[in-house]
Figure 1: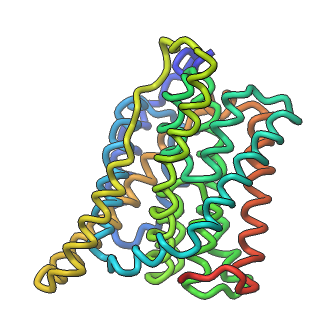
Figure 2: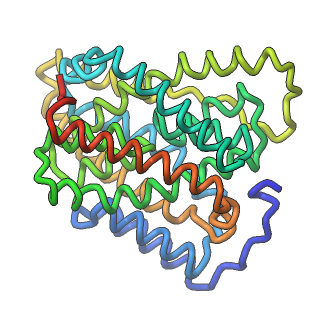
Amino acid sequence: MSEAALPSRPASSLATPLLILGAVLALAPFTSAAVALLGGAAIALVFGNPFQGQTRTWTHRLLPLAVVGLGAGMDLRTVARAGLHGIGITAMSLAVVILLGLWLARVLKVDRDAGLLIAVGTAICGGSAIAAVAPVMRARAHQVSVALATVFLLNAVALILFPPIGHYFHLGQSPFGLWAALAIHDTSSVVGAGLAYGKQALEVATTVKLARALWIVPVTMGIGMIHARNNKEVAADAPPVKKPWFIAGFLAMAALVTWVPALHGAGHLVALAANRALVLTLFLIGAGLSREAIRTVGIRPFLQGLILWLIVASLGLTLVKTGILTVG
């Protein structure tokens, strides 16, 4: 059964004013990314969200715009180094994570397509990868919902836990940014964790994550070719193809600020506005959570996602802490 078909709980009369207040506070400079995410989730789970459709729409619109705006605060030379550094290791790590995820799905008897979506989301960039891969493998709405809900819940946990874990292990700004980019699923939560840790951590986390997100294209093409051989019919509720255009926008914005010195001042202001837009996006992501979505996940897909994520996060932390993996 698809998420849309699940019965929804009527929202409280307090939901609307609380959501409006929360959105306004998310734009305030004193509101952190973690507080915004938790606040949105708390309102949605306790009082309900009468604007689930609009919340989802604005989340999808704001996140790419915020990422593009963050490019105005980046040096394109740093982005290029992050993308070219360790390209072979990146390709190998993606393959290992996807294969391990598929093995876990088989052991835990998770639906094949849902298991593949969770594995791809963990390997590359969470919801963006799932949204790109789902149409080419003709995934149905309930399979996409399960994968997205699993990734969303783990993203929420990571956004809250990663900064204190980084401080506990005395990770520097660059090592933390690298670890966050490798071990947190969605770009939004990677950027949110980097934002909470520090300016340099934010820069490293964003550039490494976006460089990793470029692998959406070849992975999607490969999965599409494999599934085309099965001659599966297109499901009526299969989602439309979504292109990660924000990556090109981020690179274009970074290029302008890097090579046109006169734009440095304006770029700084754009990046500040993008930071607040990102925090607002995280509030909306939290507000999009529902009890029905949590029930949709079920224990087996969630266990697959949790175990896979713990392996990736633990191994990534070890490699970063020991200096085996560094930012080029």
